Length: 287
Image (tube, rainbow, N blue to C red; front, side):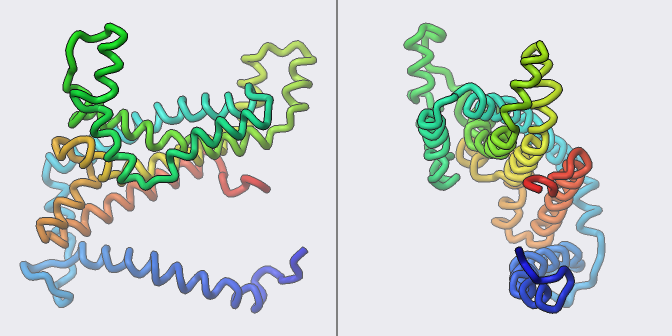
């Protein structure tokens, strides 16, 4: 057991290196982005006056407001799909698979593809969803379609399919941890008292695994909201969300508008995480 008291000088000095690193790597860049977003004038210079004109110009554009709403709708849809799929996978691995060997093997088969980078996995969907890709070939093989269709690649459907595949692991991982922490004796006691399986799940398993669901949804929310790699690669620049808009403004050397969209994106993320913390106190997990 640690002998270091809370708020003691020793605790302060131990936390100082991490605090300095967080200030240099996180706080200062965020402050810089906020500062650039407030630059006025026509030139790009630190001497520009501070103004909210950039935010007013962005938020007064109906197309940009629609883009924000469309990004939130896409994020909510992916969260719902990955939440259900992730929970089903986690429940199957932890509750239905009783053999530890099979459990580890299935979990590794589920996790190993995610050891590659997000960019490589996104690029891999291009030949998979293409006109002559594996998905079209499989659908023609089972007789569902007569000829290849182009609805999968460079479309919202293709982006959604790729994002579900990429982020389901994030939704299921925390749930696996929470389900493993539930004592089997609780389920056995409920079954002994003649409780139906649906009641056992609804009254015991689901409430105890709720923190894992919330953590998984927070991870999916943050990643999908800022995702531009999948949208650009699989969508072929035919669709745009906030993450792509940042990239487009940056490539056009519009630094102030790039900073504005970045700040708005960070505010949306902060609002989502704050809402999640009001649903359940995830800070108590593991306590």
